[in-house]
Image (cartoon, rainbow over the protein chains, first blue to last red):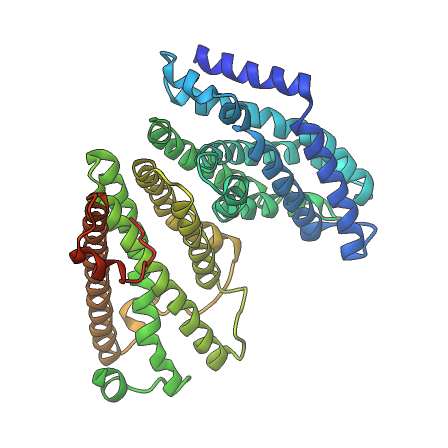
Length: 223
Length: 227
């Protein structure tokens, strides 16, 4: 646990100093919103369209960050150091997932207000508490699955080519749940029906893939 | 086959095209079962560290993907015939199946882009287990997403189909399962033989004086080996 905290702290410190991932993710998200504006030719969004635009953008922006997650470890032989250190392997997974979670939250702190500014007319403040809960649960799932797949992809020849195609199908259930939970929140007569059910689905997704990642991560870090 | 064409009664609503059901549904069931079994095999591989289990898992996924593409094709034909469209989004089974096939299609690039055999076996196994667990989760999620009212052939228990249809269906299921098993065994044998051939060839090449006995072997076209 202490090792995990130390590694996560190291990652966040590196990110804070280099400002590599999060600004790029945020910029990507904002640009994507603009492209959606032209692609859909709409000035205001609501309901399922708003939910779809929001989640597709966040997911793709997240992929940018996930791709960079293990790059330092690979390029600077961090893996060897971590494997030689007398710590549990899973603390690396926990640290990476935690760092990614912080990235994602930072991304959303920028992307959500911009999204509201661009596309939402009114009622965003009502939706915000529940939207934050949906986002947090979806982020946890993305962080766990992303950290695990990134550690797979980083050891392959195709690397950043492989990650998106591995990640996208696996995140489909989480995206279904997140988009479905966001839809009533961003509808114009503000609605909360069904949000609870989808929050449970998201939590279950997080739990299932969290346990899987926990059980399998050891095998990814053997040599 | 004879049962399909002559024994099972024609569907009152869909007529002859309904008979594709006896290929489509068993294939889908077998492919999905294959995916889950591949996950179990991969778990055994991680536990025992015997590479044989990795190959078994790999071949199971391989044949399942082929079956999965077949399922999508026959499903599209059936959909065109009975719903008038090649593809419909409001049918959860269809969408789930597509996602599962897309996911397993990424198994190949993953496998081929890792060079170290031990690591490849382990990573492929981890993927197979994750994806195997993903199959039921995905089906549940997609089904939840659509509050649909679509005729579920099996949801109405045995009342949905007359006995002759059930019998034909079960025979088809058995037939397709046996076909699947045969293909898996065939592919495993082929892989095994290919691996041995490769090892023998390496052994030959390692010998410094290449005798005349070695020449006919080199004329064998180099096929991609998945070892």
